[in-house]
Amino acid sequence: MDFSLSEEHQMVQDMARRFATEKIKPVAAELDKTHRHPEEIIKEMAELKFMGIAVPEEYGGGGMDYVSYVLAMIEISKACASIGVIMSVNNSLYCYPVMAFGTDEQKEKYLTPVASGESLGCYGLTEAGAGSDAAAVRTTAVRDGDGWILNGEKKFITNGNVADYCVLAVKTEKDQGYKGISTFVVNLKETPGFSVGVVEDKLGILASGTAELVFEDARLPGDALLGKEGEGFKQMLTTLDGGRIGIASQAIGIGRAALEEALDYAKEREQFGKPIARLQAIQFKLADMAMELDAAELLTLRAAYNEDNHLPYEKEAAMAKCFAADAAMRAAIEGVQILGGYGYIKEYPMERHMRDAKICQIYEGTNEIMRVVIASRLLQGK
Image (tube, rainbow, N blue to C red):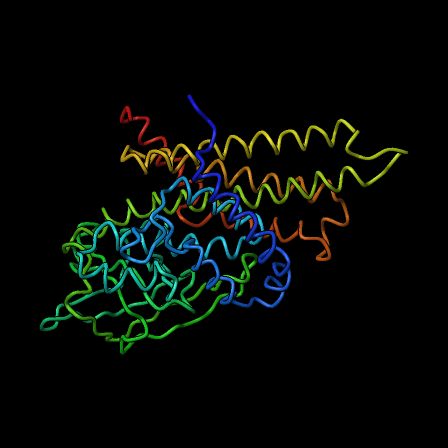
């Protein structure tokens, strides 16, 4: 078994690391403080093909694979978790379903602008009453001539305040449960009746907008339906599996940033006449952080490998996302502890890592739901 990266994968990792170090890390604190959407950085990432990294070149993407996506996501998220999740949503939750379920015409119309980075995408699933219970969505789409009329509100939508396009899960048959869910792809800028509602004030990932999407008798063209009616729930589950690989990568990046900063501080900070890195209590914390993050990365690369090779990856993606999110949270908490008082103040980035890490345990399916998914597959013998 070969654990080494291919030349192509090494090149992607090096390119992402260099870009993150030179362009993102120097402004990460300012972005967190001002909550500013980093439009100029996203445009530069688009030039590197990071905004549609696994999309074929004919549709404006990078033509790379999901292992490349993981490697790039880790480096970008290590510098700034907000930019990491903007990239993740664009790739996993928008580009993937349009690429996987769209017609050639839909790909040309709806995928190319987003995969190329000309526009930004988002994914509309969560509602006030539908989160972990995704089948409980209440936003509706009703046929009207050759088009559709949308009504409802989506909640906590990453990129929702700045996106041009959205993949949207709605009910087309009210009384059919999950069988009544269909997926639409929406040009938000050209949809009368659409508006952005509340933009949330959050704990972390502050340079990433999280917004309500409001549809009031919003009219969509007939070609907005992605796949067939009633297939939306199945499409949603597959899309979220890929999204979990992205969030696992984001979590690893956050955890690695916390580990590196804790390690550097421990080598410099002296107490009792020696660097605290020589204290066994500190060494054990650093060792646990490193072990868990390495394990998380291996789980995530396995899930990405399976996706690239058309192998089952639902359980693997859930394991990667759950373990990586927990590992990142523990790394950030221990990082704050190692820095002591400095870890708790905004002069140092460690407190930002702790705030950013928490959401990884919540979105793209809570870690409780991840454990349900994993157990379900185990009980089915898969």
